[in-house]
Image (cartoon, rainbow, N blue to C red; front, side, top):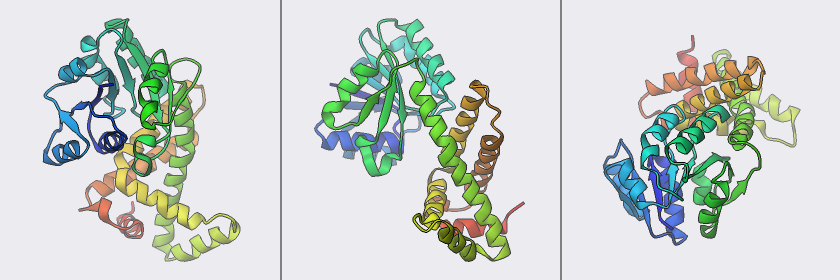
Length: 288
């Protein structure tokens, strides 16, 4: 099986490294932002970087789109004319169900004999690498799963229309990233009042079987590492709720807070290497 990546950032290269160690020998990739760091990751994972998305489609049986939600549909429109009969095009981006369906239509119109799989990545890739839990749906879901399961990938196939897995992920993200936004907001306020440690101790005392302080700092750390991406995923969750006829009163507020945090981190040198506690102090000192 020959695997191709469109987009070769942190998540894609981490999955590729795991697959390489699991025995997958033929992998290619294209990324418009190719640089020396990416070349090093590709070399470590046994991945050949190519000069265009067209080249990837020419050399792969399964093509994984791993870009960002904001450009996933545009990337699909660019790539779709190069897809071949029987080829699997799997979108692994954190998009709303509506965007997943749009991509499926793009693929079908361009190459009706290609297989589209809408894939939701259900956890952080880093700790799991290629074994990160995924949920796939769409006409190409079974083919996608069959191609990657032999290498240890944990893929569940979900029955239903295209985007069912994305709906599951977005509802889950509404909870997890909503908690992330809530903790950031509360911790920034507590820092301003000088009661951060007391607040966390009180939370832990209220839920003695669960260390909420540990969860709070973990979520702040995740926000430090991927603030912009997590804020944009919350935007997709808001769209998902709206598509279901639900007024996203809480989710919209959470999305605003995550964007607020991400924007301030961008202006902070080496933000991703700072501790969660430093991040909260930084946000509190510049709070508006």
